[in-house]
Length: 57
Picture 1 (cartoon, rainbow, N blue to C red):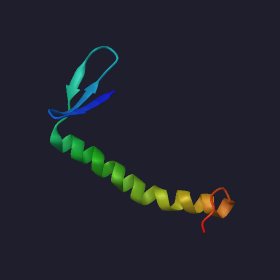
Picture 2: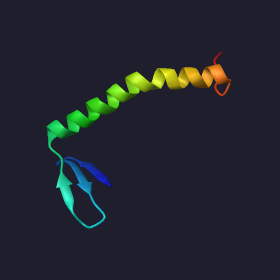
Picture 3: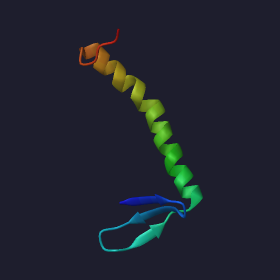
């Protein structure tokens, strides 16, 4: 579970450990997700359109 409180991002693990994530690591994760979406989202949506699972108007 993660907690994005005002003190910064913290990750809570099942064993009770808590990791405070540095601003740089948080930015790195954000950038990685943004790059994945930019790369993968358009072909995914186009595949849905091409298969008829998603219709545009």
